[in-house]
Image 1: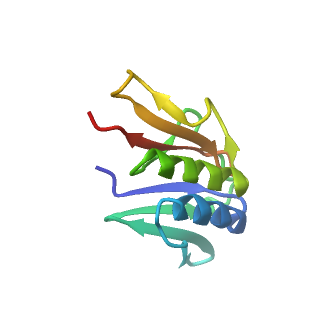
Image 2: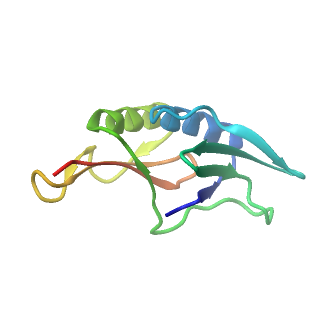
Length: 130
């Protein structure tokens, strides 16, 4: 459904360290630099989709979306936990409830939430079978 997601950053190198860790926990490689004139950004590609961290085009400070969340699909509860731990260890902040099961018992979602170093809200989700 989605082709790409872009989040802004005021410190690209700090953001890259964070996203290399959390996306690395999901099996993705390091972000690759993508120069756009005077503006820099990093791109992560997987399964036909792209995730970008960038300096804002308008030259203003990057701010997070109030009410927005970027969700990453995981293959297991262990992968969600690795993602969350990598994020916290690399400058992210754990938000909402601790990683765990949400929804109806036996048919819910296993979720974890973080804010990246720029305040963007992220979620890792494993949809349990059944």
